[in-house]
Image (cartoon, rainbow, N blue to C red; front, side, top):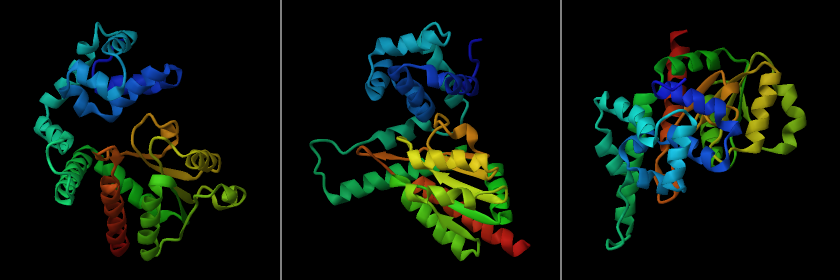
Length: 273
Protein backbone atom coordinates (compact mmCIF):
# COMPACT_ATOMS: atom_id res chain seq x y z
CA UNK A 1 0.00 0.00 0.00
CA UNK A 2 1.30 3.45 -0.93
CA UNK A 3 2.43 5.41 2.17
CA UNK A 4 -0.03 8.21 2.93
CA UNK A 5 2.17 10.26 5.26
CA UNK A 6 5.72 10.60 6.55
CA UNK A 7 5.21 8.18 9.44
CA UNK A 8 3.94 5.48 7.09
CA UNK A 9 6.90 6.04 4.78
CA UNK A 10 9.44 5.98 7.60
CA UNK A 11 7.98 2.74 8.96
CA UNK A 12 8.16 1.20 5.49
CA UNK A 13 11.77 2.33 5.04
CA UNK A 14 12.79 0.91 8.41
CA UNK A 15 11.16 -2.41 7.61
CA UNK A 16 12.74 -2.60 4.14
CA UNK A 17 16.15 -1.15 5.00
CA UNK A 18 18.11 -4.40 5.59
CA UNK A 19 17.16 -5.69 2.13
CA UNK A 20 17.98 -2.51 0.18
CA UNK A 21 21.04 -2.08 -2.02
CA UNK A 22 23.88 0.16 -0.84
CA UNK A 23 22.68 3.18 -2.86
CA UNK A 24 19.07 2.63 -1.85
CA UNK A 25 20.17 2.56 1.81
CA UNK A 26 21.88 5.92 1.35
CA UNK A 27 18.65 7.40 0.04
CA UNK A 28 16.54 5.86 2.83
CA UNK A 29 18.94 7.20 5.46
CA UNK A 30 18.82 10.68 3.90
CA UNK A 31 15.01 10.69 3.85
CA UNK A 32 14.77 9.89 7.56
CA UNK A 33 17.79 11.95 8.64
CA UNK A 34 17.17 15.06 6.53
CA UNK A 35 13.38 15.55 6.13
CA UNK A 36 13.61 19.34 5.88
CA UNK A 37 16.24 19.22 3.14
CA UNK A 38 14.18 16.61 1.31
CA UNK A 39 11.14 18.89 1.32
CA UNK A 40 12.90 22.05 0.21
CA UNK A 41 15.64 21.02 -2.21
CA UNK A 42 15.43 20.11 -5.89
CA UNK A 43 15.95 16.62 -7.24
CA UNK A 44 19.42 17.55 -8.48
CA UNK A 45 20.51 19.01 -5.13
CA UNK A 46 19.20 16.01 -3.19
CA UNK A 47 20.96 13.61 -5.56
CA UNK A 48 24.22 15.50 -5.05
CA UNK A 49 23.76 15.47 -1.25
CA UNK A 50 23.11 11.74 -1.20
CA UNK A 51 25.80 10.92 -3.75
CA UNK A 52 23.61 9.22 -6.35
CA UNK A 53 22.23 10.03 -9.81
CA UNK A 54 18.82 11.76 -9.98
CA UNK A 55 17.53 8.72 -11.86
CA UNK A 56 18.39 6.59 -8.81
CA UNK A 57 16.11 8.75 -6.67
CA UNK A 58 13.30 8.26 -9.17
CA UNK A 59 13.90 4.51 -9.21
CA UNK A 60 13.90 4.48 -5.39
CA UNK A 61 10.52 6.23 -5.26
CA UNK A 62 8.99 3.85 -7.79
CA UNK A 63 10.35 0.89 -5.82
CA UNK A 64 8.08 1.98 -2.95
CA UNK A 65 5.01 2.52 -5.13
CA UNK A 66 5.26 6.21 -5.99
CA UNK A 67 4.80 7.46 -9.56
CA UNK A 68 8.07 9.36 -9.23
CA UNK A 69 10.27 11.16 -6.73
CA UNK A 70 8.07 14.27 -6.78
CA UNK A 71 5.16 12.30 -5.34
CA UNK A 72 7.35 10.97 -2.51
CA UNK A 73 8.73 14.45 -1.87
CA UNK A 74 5.20 15.86 -1.71
CA UNK A 75 4.60 14.02 1.59
CA UNK A 76 7.33 16.13 3.20
CA UNK A 77 6.23 19.37 1.56
CA UNK A 78 2.72 18.89 2.98
CA UNK A 79 4.13 18.28 6.45
CA UNK A 80 6.25 21.41 6.38
CA UNK A 81 3.51 23.59 4.88
CA UNK A 82 1.31 22.60 7.84
CA UNK A 83 3.95 23.74 10.33
CA UNK A 84 4.13 27.24 11.69
CA UNK A 85 7.91 27.00 11.73
CA UNK A 86 9.78 28.79 8.92
CA UNK A 87 11.78 25.73 7.91
CA UNK A 88 12.92 27.24 4.64
CA UNK A 89 14.70 30.10 6.38
CA UNK A 90 16.09 27.71 8.97
CA UNK A 91 17.57 25.32 6.45
CA UNK A 92 18.98 28.26 4.52
CA UNK A 93 20.70 29.41 7.70
CA UNK A 94 21.95 25.93 8.58
CA UNK A 95 23.32 25.29 5.08
CA UNK A 96 25.02 28.65 4.79
CA UNK A 97 28.76 28.00 4.53
CA UNK A 98 31.48 30.59 4.46
CA UNK A 99 32.12 31.32 0.77
CA UNK A 100 35.43 30.98 -0.98
CA UNK A 101 35.80 34.74 -1.36
CA UNK A 102 35.26 35.34 2.34
CA UNK A 103 38.14 35.14 4.77
CA UNK A 104 37.90 31.88 6.73
CA UNK A 105 38.87 33.50 10.00
CA UNK A 106 37.97 32.38 13.50
CA UNK A 107 35.15 34.89 13.80
CA UNK A 108 33.35 33.61 10.69
CA UNK A 109 33.80 29.99 11.80
CA UNK A 110 32.53 30.81 15.30
CA UNK A 111 29.33 32.41 14.02
CA UNK A 112 28.80 29.57 11.55
CA UNK A 113 29.16 26.96 14.32
CA UNK A 114 26.85 28.76 16.75
CA UNK A 115 24.11 29.47 14.19
CA UNK A 116 23.98 25.84 13.07
CA UNK A 117 23.89 24.54 16.65
CA UNK A 118 21.07 26.95 17.50
CA UNK A 119 19.06 25.63 14.55
CA UNK A 120 19.69 22.00 15.54
CA UNK A 121 18.64 22.70 19.13
CA UNK A 122 15.39 24.32 17.95
CA UNK A 123 14.60 21.25 15.88
CA UNK A 124 15.31 19.04 18.92
CA UNK A 125 12.92 21.16 21.00
CA UNK A 126 10.12 20.89 18.45
CA UNK A 127 10.46 17.22 17.57
CA UNK A 128 11.22 15.51 20.90
CA UNK A 129 8.34 13.81 22.69
CA UNK A 130 8.08 15.41 26.15
CA UNK A 131 6.35 12.33 27.57
CA UNK A 132 9.32 10.24 26.46
CA UNK A 133 11.62 12.45 28.52
CA UNK A 134 9.36 12.19 31.59
CA UNK A 135 9.13 8.40 31.33
CA UNK A 136 12.91 8.14 30.94
CA UNK A 137 13.43 10.31 34.02
CA UNK A 138 11.15 8.13 36.15
CA UNK A 139 12.86 4.99 34.87
CA UNK A 140 16.31 6.33 35.74
CA UNK A 141 15.16 7.38 39.21
CA UNK A 142 13.83 3.88 39.89
CA UNK A 143 16.91 2.02 38.59
CA UNK A 144 19.22 0.10 40.91
CA UNK A 145 22.10 0.95 38.59
CA UNK A 146 22.65 2.85 35.36
CA UNK A 147 25.23 1.73 32.82
CA UNK A 148 26.43 4.19 30.18
CA UNK A 149 27.82 3.08 26.86
CA UNK A 150 29.24 5.46 24.28
CA UNK A 151 32.48 5.29 22.31
CA UNK A 152 34.25 7.41 19.72
CA UNK A 153 32.20 10.57 19.04
CA UNK A 154 29.62 9.51 21.62
CA UNK A 155 32.16 9.12 24.44
CA UNK A 156 31.93 12.77 25.64
CA UNK A 157 28.16 12.39 25.97
CA UNK A 158 28.54 9.22 28.05
CA UNK A 159 31.14 10.92 30.25
CA UNK A 160 28.97 13.98 30.82
CA UNK A 161 25.93 11.80 31.54
CA UNK A 162 28.01 9.88 34.09
CA UNK A 163 29.19 13.12 35.72
CA UNK A 164 25.63 14.45 36.07
CA UNK A 165 24.06 11.20 37.30
CA UNK A 166 26.87 10.60 39.77
CA UNK A 167 26.35 14.08 41.25
CA UNK A 168 22.64 13.28 41.56
CA UNK A 169 23.47 10.25 43.69
CA UNK A 170 22.48 7.67 41.09
CA UNK A 171 24.67 4.59 41.04
CA UNK A 172 26.22 4.37 37.58
CA UNK A 173 29.21 3.19 35.60
CA UNK A 174 30.60 3.58 32.09
CA UNK A 175 31.47 0.76 29.72
CA UNK A 176 33.22 1.45 26.42
CA UNK A 177 35.82 -1.28 26.28
CA UNK A 178 35.47 -4.73 24.70
CA UNK A 179 37.75 -6.05 27.45
CA UNK A 180 34.81 -5.58 29.84
CA UNK A 181 32.58 -7.96 27.88
CA UNK A 182 32.85 -10.82 30.37
CA UNK A 183 31.86 -8.67 33.35
CA UNK A 184 29.07 -6.86 31.46
CA UNK A 185 26.58 -9.71 31.91
CA UNK A 186 27.07 -9.51 35.69
CA UNK A 187 26.06 -5.84 35.72
CA UNK A 188 22.87 -6.23 33.72
CA UNK A 189 19.50 -7.35 35.06
CA UNK A 190 15.85 -6.29 35.02
CA UNK A 191 16.55 -3.49 37.51
CA UNK A 192 19.38 -2.00 35.44
CA UNK A 193 19.04 0.80 32.89
CA UNK A 194 21.47 0.96 29.99
CA UNK A 195 21.94 4.36 28.35
CA UNK A 196 23.52 3.80 24.94
CA UNK A 197 24.74 6.63 22.71
CA UNK A 198 25.79 5.89 19.15
CA UNK A 199 25.78 7.66 15.79
CA UNK A 200 26.39 6.50 12.23
CA UNK A 201 28.74 4.69 11.68
CA UNK A 202 27.41 2.78 14.68
CA UNK A 203 29.81 1.43 17.28
CA UNK A 204 30.06 -2.36 17.26
CA UNK A 205 30.68 -2.38 21.01
CA UNK A 206 27.60 -0.26 21.73
CA UNK A 207 25.50 -2.41 19.42
CA UNK A 208 26.57 -5.60 21.18
CA UNK A 209 26.06 -4.02 24.60
CA UNK A 210 22.46 -3.13 23.75
CA UNK A 211 21.82 -6.68 22.54
CA UNK A 212 23.31 -8.06 25.75
CA UNK A 213 21.14 -5.70 27.81
CA UNK A 214 17.98 -6.94 26.12
CA UNK A 215 18.98 -10.56 26.81
CA UNK A 216 19.27 -9.61 30.49
CA UNK A 217 15.88 -7.83 30.52
CA UNK A 218 17.52 -4.49 31.29
CA UNK A 219 15.81 -1.28 30.19
CA UNK A 220 17.48 0.45 27.24
CA UNK A 221 17.52 4.20 26.61
CA UNK A 222 19.06 4.85 23.20
CA UNK A 223 20.33 8.20 21.95
CA UNK A 224 21.08 8.06 18.22
CA UNK A 225 20.64 9.86 14.92
CA UNK A 226 17.84 7.99 13.13
CA UNK A 227 15.41 5.12 13.47
CA UNK A 228 17.48 3.31 10.84
CA UNK A 229 20.03 2.44 13.50
CA UNK A 230 20.01 -1.40 13.42
CA UNK A 231 19.36 -1.56 17.18
CA UNK A 232 16.68 1.16 17.30
CA UNK A 233 13.95 -1.47 17.63
CA UNK A 234 15.60 -2.81 20.80
CA UNK A 235 15.25 0.49 22.67
CA UNK A 236 12.59 0.93 25.33
CA UNK A 237 13.09 4.68 25.02
CA UNK A 238 14.40 5.97 21.70
CA UNK A 239 15.67 9.51 21.15
CA UNK A 240 16.58 10.44 17.56
CA UNK A 241 18.65 13.62 17.51
CA UNK A 242 19.50 15.56 14.37
CA UNK A 243 22.83 17.23 15.10
CA UNK A 244 24.21 20.19 13.17
CA UNK A 245 26.68 19.37 10.42
CA UNK A 246 29.48 21.92 10.35
CA UNK A 247 32.05 21.77 7.54
CA UNK A 248 31.73 17.93 7.41
CA UNK A 249 31.85 17.66 11.23
CA UNK A 250 28.78 16.64 13.26
CA UNK A 251 28.15 18.56 16.47
CA UNK A 252 27.09 17.20 19.87
CA UNK A 253 25.32 20.35 21.06
CA UNK A 254 21.73 19.16 20.73
CA UNK A 255 22.49 15.84 22.44
CA UNK A 256 24.14 17.69 25.32
CA UNK A 257 20.97 19.80 25.73
CA UNK A 258 18.87 16.65 25.93
CA UNK A 259 21.18 15.12 28.52
CA UNK A 260 21.03 18.28 30.63
CA UNK A 261 17.23 18.34 30.43
CA UNK A 262 16.98 14.71 31.56
CA UNK A 263 19.44 15.12 34.44
CA UNK A 264 17.98 18.40 35.73
CA UNK A 265 14.52 16.81 35.58
CA UNK A 266 15.87 13.93 37.68
CA UNK A 267 17.04 16.45 40.28
CA UNK A 268 13.58 18.03 40.56
CA UNK A 269 11.95 14.60 40.63
CA UNK A 270 14.17 13.63 43.57
CA UNK A 271 13.20 16.78 45.47
CA UNK A 272 9.51 16.08 44.97
CA UNK A 273 9.92 12.57 46.37
